[in-house]
Length: 465
Image 1 (cartoon, rainbow, N blue to C red):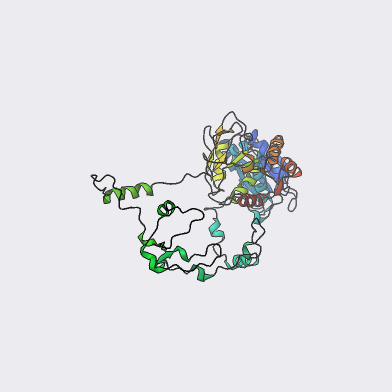
Image 2 (tube, rainbow, N blue to C red):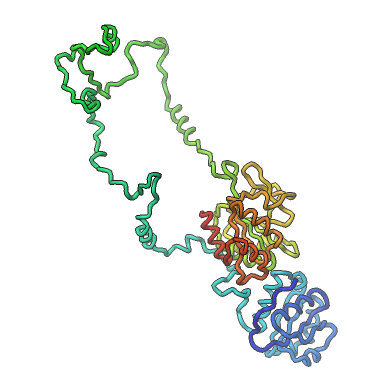
């Protein structure tokens, strides 16, 4: 599959000569020159053509596919290669022969920039602000993004929304609760003193204080009942109010003796230290983690031709420690998924690895998933499996599927079934998208749309760190 031709050519069309031995490298470099907007006036094997024939073609650009046989012939072409009016570009023949898909499209853009003397190597629809190529050094962290941020706007926004607090079941807003009288909270616990239950107002009836002279005579409930007291019996005049002092309460009735011959237990300092050590080692189970509680989902990124650019840009927008695993399902013609791991690792703040069978997915990790690899459920875990389907095992209400450039149209139906079950589904917007068929289909059927950077922000909002 060839890559799209540039929409515009800068300046007059360049006349290019290709010096390369016949084969795959020559064919791919010829295509790259044509896609870059150049007129290929001569394609020749350096060992079978003279310098005069090259000069006669009147080129203003020469592209040389380097290999050992070609390097041995270059001295014969000094009159052309040393001419300051001719742009000379060298490329490795071995690399050119293997270049396909996204690599071929990217090389064509760079070749056009070299031929026409500009530095615009971004895909169509992209701007310098959307630079998607890995840069030297570590990516900027969220903390660095907000290092100079002021807290004042957040405080002002909170003040604006202060009146819009949630309401309870009976419709009373939290902002309408009266302030608590501070005097009600001023309690002196040391001066409670004795509690006189006779001072309580029972049923609103006024009660005259009892005669304090009878305080030495106390009639218990058993004595009152045995004296014939019933519903009509009157309380004897000798009954005195009982005064209870909370400081005198005790579980010892002073009469019952249990184990009088048993020595009082002693607790050593060593026992206390051992108990504290054991308590300190206890922890609560995380019921909201993989293997416990509700099943957690994952984020799937589906891409194809032109997709690595979009995947890298999206990964750049996801922070370290993103609370869900991210799976990259990228179609590659050469099948070199181990190299894709290295490319994505340079753009991602999260670790990137190649999916392997029987590996349990972990949040905060990125997995490059070959076409032969699927997913299966194991308790609350998601595990890679060589014979399963990726979509069937995903819990829809906790997963997201993002279709980027070159996504497979055949996956749209299972994706939309997950969307109907609660999954977050989105497609890359047509701007800057090489193959938008699948992404457009997803958006047309109700999925969200956006550029890769905006979709990364949407995922971060759905699952904040």
